[in-house]
Length: 162
Image 1 (cartoon, rainbow, N blue to C red):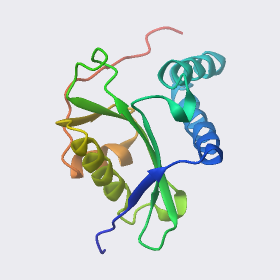
Image 2 (cartoon, helix red, strand yellow):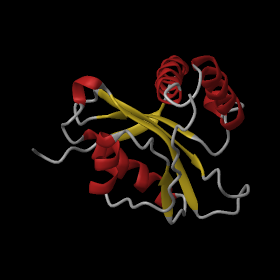
Image 3 (cartoon, rainbow, N blue to C red):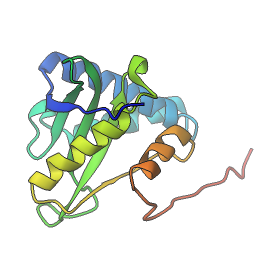
């Protein structure tokens, strides 16, 4: 497979709405494995409100569309300040979400989007790009590992009640 390249550009308001709906639905599906669906929906809505209080115009956040060399949209990403650090105190950015559109998966675009995100944060003076991934998302974990990401902490749980 040839190495893919992408260009990142700011989302339009319509793209932002669509990407937010998709991201929130995906997050609810993942969280609903661990908690009641309504609680998963509420936590997801609260997260969006907390981290993107101004939506697309939230300072310090990049809500981007990834386009291939033909100008076709192949995915989206949300990159912003590391939520583990105080405002303006970190040299690490955070990849809140990355998505490759289904028809472009398994073609190298995930790797290309990650590389473009890394270049973006490096231009801003960041030394690291961190992220969180659901433990059961084997495809994403494999992508991150192939791209040089390693585990920096691990949260584990086990169902023990009825």
